[in-house]
Amino acid sequence: MSTPRVNWSGVFPAVTTQFNDDFSVNLDQTHGVISNLVRDGVSGLVMCGTVGENTSLTLEEKIALVEVAKDAAGGRVPVICGVAEFTSLDATRTAQAVGRAGADGIMLMPALVYSAKPHETAAHFRSVASALDLPLMVYNNPPIYKNDVTPDILISLADVDNIVCFKDSSGDTRRFIDVRNEVGDRFVLFAGLDDVVLESIAVGAEGWVSGMSNIFPTEGETIFRLAKAGRFADAMPLYEWFMPLLHLDARPDLVQCIKLCEELAGRGRALTRPPRLALPDADRAFVERLMAKALETRPQLPDVGI
Image (cartoon, rainbow, N blue to C red):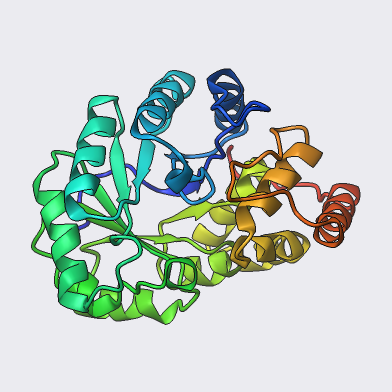
């Protein structure tokens, strides 16, 4: 089987949603965040993902955010929209709505809250995909969402033409090898956990949905391109510099950590929508120390054509 025809490769930041003081969505600020990411060389955008606070947003807000992203991207990079709903029907309706708003693809979660059996998880992805004309990325994040899309489940979906991509945030890079052993390059593989991205690329990842590349997009894209070119010796010093911050992507409060780093770098606001609250003082001080060190020791980047 050959890889489906989607132009998804490189670093796709999981873009943050910017809020006003009253927790309403600030579309203008979000547009600015996206414009800066595209300017700094990212290869794509994921709107309304975990970092975009998907489950805190209304459908109308998600539609507006996709429209803003399409405007800011200006056709230069693909815009994918996250879909995370309680039921398959709601996921289908949401995916269709953001598709009409211009999304180039859908990043679909398993149905939230319900602890599905494997055949139920597969049926969820199959039913939503069958109702769409868009390419679909299967999103697996068992540490956060407690529902595991295993290689066997993914492989069972190989006959669904528009399921084209698998984003794995389990941290277990062996899964990419297991998938390739069964179905070759049927699915485009995406790293979904920041602190195993180099390892993921080494075993076949073609892309990276990244949290911390919101703050250091050029560094993230540089690491990715070096690794894809097999230049691991060149990538390692940059990866080691980045790793303390990349670990933040694996925390339950990753959204607050990433948005705080964004604010410290002058790229966005730290404000999150409840139930997510600002980091406690000790956690905030820890993140501030990490950012201060990263900014002080920011490395010179090799030219990788960004």
